[in-house]
Amino acid sequence: MTFESVARAAGVSRSWLYTQPDIRAEVLRLRGLGRRAHGTSVPARHRSSDASLLRRLEATTARNRELAQANQRLRHHLAQAPGQLRAGIRPDPGPTSQ
Image (tube, rainbow, N blue to C red; front, side, top):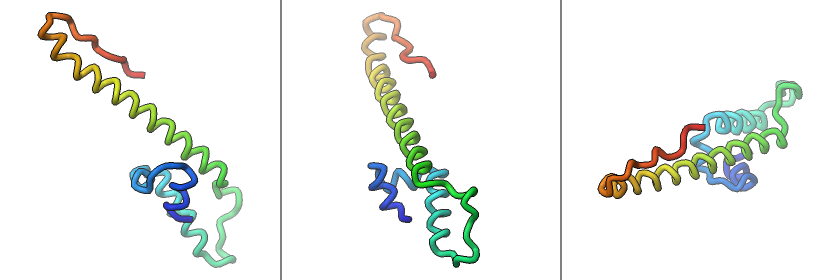
């Protein structure tokens, strides 16, 4: 298991993976499993399946997209505020927290 293979499968960058503490820890844990001797393997009930990891990564990626869209909306509102103030219009407070 490598960060490259996870990034490729999930369609995200390696640098983004490195910034996600839970995903990074899981990749490192799984990488360590590959290096262990057969007699010291982790019991199956304690292992995450590839499908489970992929779902977690997809959920995190979706949340990242949502946050990027929220940031874009906030930047737009911030860019509009000075003009609204000059025109004597009370600035729209923008989207409220979710």
